[in-house]
Length: 393
Ligand SMILES: Nc1ncnc2c1ncn2[C@@H]1O[C@H](COP(=O)(O)OP(=O)(O)OP(=O)(O)O)[C@@H](O)[C@H]1O
Image 1: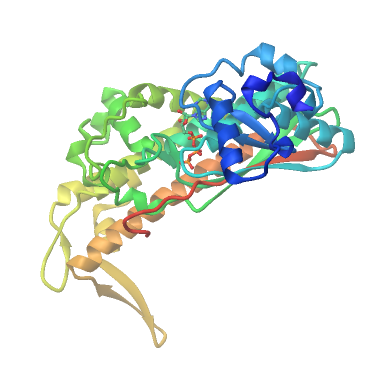
Image 2: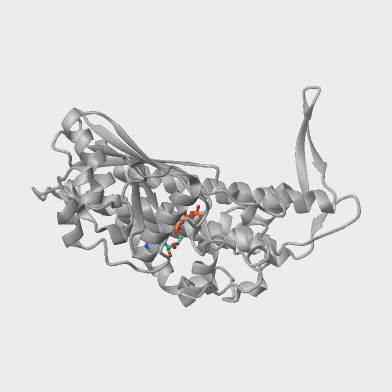
């Protein structure tokens, strides 16, 4: 049992063995263990994890070896044991397994899912097959891309996932990863046009502004200062000490290339981000019939989206109505056009995100590497945490 491997001073390693089953006893044990640097505690086969908010030297290769092919209660509580158990069960019983990670925002769910993936990557493919290495590489690198476009700084977490993720990793009969699939759901698209005090838009916007090379910035008619753009400056200070947007931009570019995005596709993705940034600054004039006030700006956005200025303005300032078999364009007034612009920005960004996830899925589709045999999956559900907003949109 877990307790055998840890001295009493570290508290009880499995809550099932607590002498008294009460909330205070539970919390006292959790606190004691945390103070002694033990962030993981079991409740049977469930792992309770307390976010240390500091790097811990407990994920190195020697720890991987300590947990590899062991039974869950053989070693002190660790998320590696859970990952190993899922992998072993799947292999031994040829049965699909699922790991559910839940907790409030900032509690460490996404980090936990990455630790699980890195553990699985470390203990598989002893044979060194190239395709398995490629799949593992894409699975790990795709996190950079997903986080750039789907994570944001919130008041609770500098790198908060603003979408839910369910990821399947497919394994062959030997237990080596041969592919995967990511289901994303409920991207918080309202953030594209509105951020609360102290929060930011998705990282991608700031990464583009600070990391893109000069010629790209010029081609997109951008200035580097987020304060110049309404959709990215509502939360106040855009600098986040724990993030390096410039460096992260390069990381995302590398990850996109490694995942199989063509240069053209990468450029298109950033152009959509630039178009959204510019869209926030569009203003409208007019009484009943709104018109875009700065046509130079609508030309720039049109260029990013490869549509004419006229078509873009029409999309923002009118809507199509079908009545009695007739289809007519109805002019919008200024508030309606502002609303249309915001809806357009949100829809475009959401589609961009889904398209990116689709591209990653193409790259890790088991059939991509020619795998046709039977496979089993480990599913990892990382569902975003609960928060209380001033305004729940
Ligand atoms: N095991 C860990 N070791 C060290 N630091 C950690 C660990 N887990 C989480 N952290 C720290 O806590 C931060 C928040 O964790 P994470 O983003 O995983 O939370 P989350 O539960 O996924 O939040 P959200 O629901 O907002 O996405 C991380 O950026 C990291 O700094």
